Image (cartoon, rainbow, N blue to C red):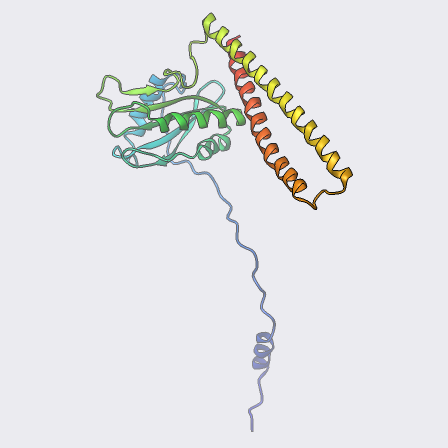
Length: 271
């Protein structure tokens, strides 16, 4: 004879038969930005490479996390008066190369609501001469910063502090434009000529585009009226031609518009 269940046993059995809640989806963490350290400055204005170098030698190279044997890239965040409001290590590479994602560099500026940035990294070899990759990275950051309305003040490469040429400013090298603010008449004329040339190129490509699509429209109308569209080799070749010609013309128009925009931006800075 089975022993009768107690009240507690009955309660446990009933609870054990209840369906269990099924967990679905995934957890999304709430994040926060943490202040790592604070550097005391007599003057927080960072409007020239010498001031950035002073900060780099005093506060970056002396930090325990800094490894002089590999390339390390930092971004310095500035307000509208070019005062330093924060800085962050973005990437660390090897002894002769470093991978830089412009999005990560600019993300720090967006989070801190910075109006401008200075990017800097070291060359463990002691020679601060920029590589082709350094120049390409700088131009990528320049384009991305313009899109986000964040000014790239400079990209500085640091070599040995004991060398006569201890750093290179890519702005002073002309990669970011003339810093003097006074342009020669020759530069203005060259920029004006480049703008007119870009406008003419765009006009030519636009005319070609209109002519091509008018021809395609006429042929399409003929094939449509003939009733053969989609049923013979001619109509299939026609639709294939439309696809490739459209892609080609789109590339030409895009290049012409970008060329005119770049020329107009350069000319605007000089007048």
